[in-house]
Image (cartoon, rainbow, N blue to C red):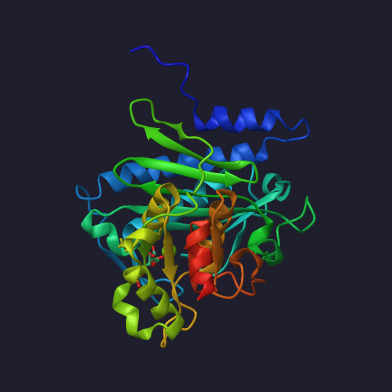
Length: 333
Ligand code: AHM
Ligand code: MG
């Protein structure tokens, strides 16, 4: 087989981007390469999930009191391990861990980035072969280089993200990441074991036809959210309606689809959980960063997600995210 030199791997792409900045140290490229490596390992396990004893509950609860699945733990250990042993990350925060982990060794203390991630989002879908994903977010440290990272490095507003991305383990495995320069998607070419550029400069269409929300919670949403859902359903044909409802229950898959096709995804607060379910630092901020760079919008209903001042790495927030004009229509209600 002759390898087509037109293909561009994730490594080549990040190195090429770095060359445009004469002062770049290559640390961010290194960090993204590490994330790609861990993602490939998780991809392998996700794909043989039916074959080995890695499915099912691990029998413990995570810090939010939810059941942890075995693959969650595997993925968490892969991402943490690869970042700990790489040279580009001073510490991590994970949805699966009670507290942030500061690596504190000579090399890590010199690294200028920290990384937050949800190692395997949508874990309730693992057992039933539905797409799941990893979500990650990269911040520049605010603490002094040469010393261990501090908690303050992890509790920064989403607007301060340097990069954010996700990996979707779906019908193919894709890594999509955003920096301020754009959003690009790489599909895993299993024949060569490389993520290769497949979706360059992704833009979220200003309008779409899809709304994604958990309808089972309808009567627990506040009136305005119910009104908006009715608007989606009642919209007449001339105005592009009615919208189609699509909800996988796996945020990575739901938002990925809406990013490519146009649409709106919502996880509003409910009467029993006013802050909703999704975590600001692990799920909402990375996706808000990606969608904004792609031309869309993300809010908690009142405020831009990226401007929320965090107080805790595990805090939750309602989330409305998607195509610019659909978000504006929702905001008008
Ligand atoms: P998880 O991190 O425990 O997997 O939960 C997050 C997931 C999201 O992927 C998805 O959008 C949401 O939970 C679905 O929740 P619900 O079943 O309440 O609609
Ligand atoms: Mg999650």
